[in-house]
Amino acid sequence: MARYSKRRKRVAEGQGIYYGDDNKCHAGADYLQVDAVYCGHSEELMQQLQPGTISLSFWSPPYFLGKSYERNNTYDSWQGLLKTVTQLHSLALKPGGFLVINIADIMAFRDPSMPRFQAMNLSGQKSPITKDMVLKAKAKHPDYNRYQLADLLGCSEQTIDRRLHGVNIRGGKYQAQTRVKLVGGGIESFAYDAGLYLYDRRIWKKDPTWANSKWTTNSLKSVSEIEDLYIFWKPGEITIDRKRLSPEEWKGWGYRQVWEIPSVRRNDDHEAKFPEELARRVIKLYSDPGDTVLDPFLGSGTTAVAAVKLRRHYIGIEKESAYFELAKKNIRHAEAQISLFLD
Image (cartoon, rainbow, N blue to C red; front, side, top):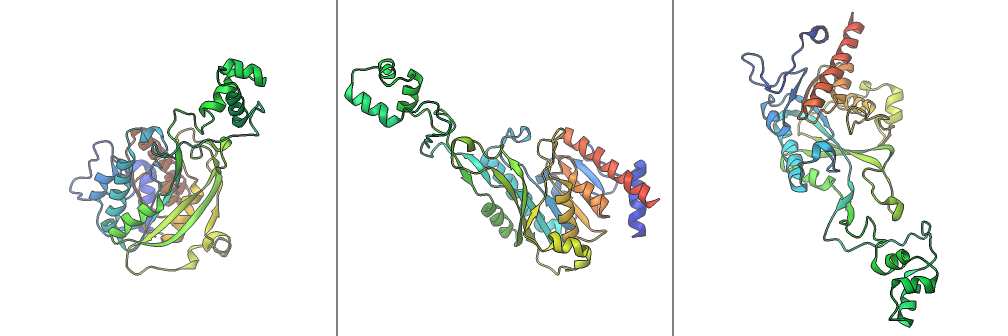
């Protein structure tokens, strides 16, 4: 622990190792160094990790929900990214190490081949005129146009048009329909092919989010309020030590499948932050002090910040330069706090 504390103190004093866009290592270094963040693509930089040294990898990848950092992704390229990064853990993890992926199913997955889904929202309908009423009037008066039908039924011509031409289709008649797309099966397959096995699955119950639940107001669909934690294991001996947690922690969430943790209240500096408490629980449960924790989609640095506070080493990778700088700032702040505590 003394050696670890000295390293933390050096980093907090500004002597830590950080890598910019050129990703140049120290002279003579063959691998990515610990307690450092790197700006670049995970599928490339992870190949520079020293094999068998990562005790825990915890990350939340892009969700394919149209965020700004996903703008160049297709569904196939997104799946390819998940596959490559997942399978690179086969070498990076130490035997008995864990890979924990936080991800959600896509609740509004666009599918142009899906039949048009029409939703007659009676509660939100301003006019009592139904499609059946319009069709009966039209059958009785086949020569009437929509304006005449509107006069006959005592409604607007827009109402006639909506009832006849299906513009009450969920999402609009020119929008591709959406359906639920499950993502866990694909991730499990990627990991299994790399020799990693699904050890457990937990659920993060968060605040309701509308970004992943389009058109809930005009359908019977629910709003998204859970995300999954898929826990994969690399074959090898693991340490089961309940003393990693306090008795209150073990009883409150250690053995519980559902973790109720409020979402981040302000995503003002990053579009999709997960709460530090989520990272804290994963790190405490699946690693020991002094272990190295990896996050190949570092974002604002939450995983590394939690690792610092829990006396773990970290390696972070982030492709967006703005978030890379933000992560460095947040990590340095956490390291400064630890340095004061050690002093």
